[in-house]
Image 1 (tube, rainbow, N blue to C red):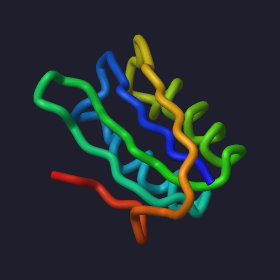
Image 2 (image 1 turned 30 degrees about the horizontal axis):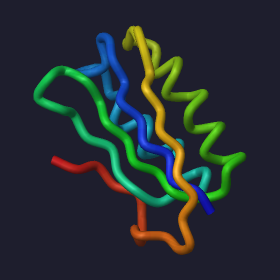
Image 3 (image 1 turned 180 degrees about the vertical axis):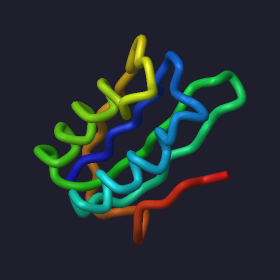
Length: 91
């Protein structure tokens, strides 16, 4: 099991980015959260199998059609057990 933390830069707010990440993460059976940050970025913390996290990273690097992703900063960690029970949008 791994944890992937992302900070996504660009035109990523008010373009349904969080909702799309939520749907992708749930389809991939990941747990964690996504939120808009005050600095205009989107942050994601996701836990699960590495191959599924890589797929989420690929999605976040492109984003939904109306978004413009300029950069994604990623951090990977090994974990022993999931910290989260589900994937949700944080406000």
